[in-house]
Amino acid sequence: MPYASQQIKPVSIGQLLKYRRQPLSMENILDSVGYTQAELPVRLAKRVISFHKLPFIVGTNPHIARVYNQYYEAFDRLHAFALINDLEAEWDFTRALERQTQVLLDVIPTIAQGFLECQLYMPREERTAFINDLIRSRIGLRVIGEQHVALSYQFREEQKKAKQSHDSAAGGGAAAERGKVELGGAGEDVWVGAIHTRLLPARMMEQCAQMVQSMCEMHYGTAPGYYVDGDVDETISYIPSHFEYITCELLKNAFRATVDFSNSTNRSSHPPIQITITKGDGYVGVRIRDQGGGISKDNMRNVFEYSWSSMQNSDSADEHGANGGGSLMAGMSLQTNLALQHGIGGPIAGLGFGLPMARLYAGYFGGSLDIVSMEGYGCDVFLKLRSIEGSVEDKQI
Image (tube, rainbow, N blue to C red; front, side, top):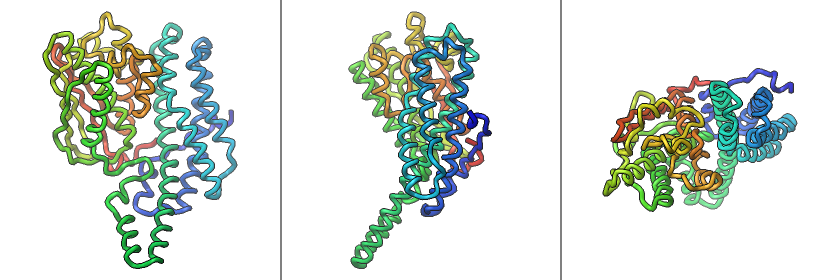
C-alpha cells in the first residue's frame, strides 16, 4: 500500500487556528481541504497496516476484523477522490469525510470488546501499545477531519449571512443595521472550525452533570446532587467534544460510586458531588470530589489499565469501581450502553476503557488526569486541561 509508506505530515494547533482572525475565503477552504485530502489517506493506510501486524487469531476476532474493515473502507473512499481545486469538489469530499467520521465513531467500543475476548492471545504490553496508538491516531484523524468539516460549514454559513446582509442593505438602512448587529455579535469569533476559543468549563460541567445524573436516576431510581464552584467564569480554548468525553467519564464514576456506597452503608441520603473549577497559567483545572467509598490500594494499580473493570471483577471490586461507568450501566446490554452514551463521544461501560481513554484524551493537548483516593470515604479526581490557543499552539497532531 503506497500510502502507508509515506511520512505523516503533522499539523500544529497554531495552523488549525490560523483562520481565527478573518472571514473564511475560498482560498482558505481549498488550502484546508488540500492538506486534509493529502494527509488522511496516509494516516488511515498506516492504521490499516497496523492491523495486519496483529497475531492471526487476534486479527480474525469478529470485533477487531470489523474495525479493520471500517478503517479500510474509510481509506478506500477518501483516497478515491481526484485532486480538489474547486468548491463543488470540496463540498463532495467534505460530505464524504463527514460520513466516514460518523462510521468510525464506534470503533473504540468495538475494539474494546475484541481485545477483551483476545486477552489470552496477546501480551498486555503489546495490547496496550496497540490500543494507545489506535486511540492517539483516532484523535488526530478526528481533529483534522472534523476541523475541516467544521470550517467548510462555517465558510458556507458566513457566505449565507453575507448574502442576507447584502440583500437587507439593498432593502433599506434599518435592515442593513440589523445585518451588521447579527454579524458583529458576541459569538462571531468564538468558533474556529471544531475549536471553541471561549469555552466555559463551568457551563460544560453543568451540562455533563445533568446528563449523567439523569442516567444514574434511570438506572438506580436515585442520584446524588451536585454543585459547581470556584472560578466559574473562567474560559478556555478547547474542543468541546473532548472536554465532554473526559468529564462525563469521570462524573459517571463519581455518581455511581456515591449511590453504591450509600446502598452498601445504609446511608440515608447521598452527599452531593462537588465540582470545582480553578484558573491556572494557560490551563484550567477541574476537581471532582465524591464520597463514594474510595478505591482500594490494590485496585488503584489497575484503574488506568485497559480492559480492567470493577464490573468484570465484581467479586473483588472496590466500592468506587473506577471503570468508566461501573455498575451504573450493569444489567444493561452493550447496545443500550452505547446508545445511551452516543452523544458523549462513545465512552465504554464495563469494558475497562473509560479512565485510560480519559487520561489519554486529557494528555493529548498537554493536560493530565490524576486520582487521589481515601479508602472508605471517597475520591478526588484532578483534571488539568491546557488551553489550545496560546499554550499548546506548537503541539503537532
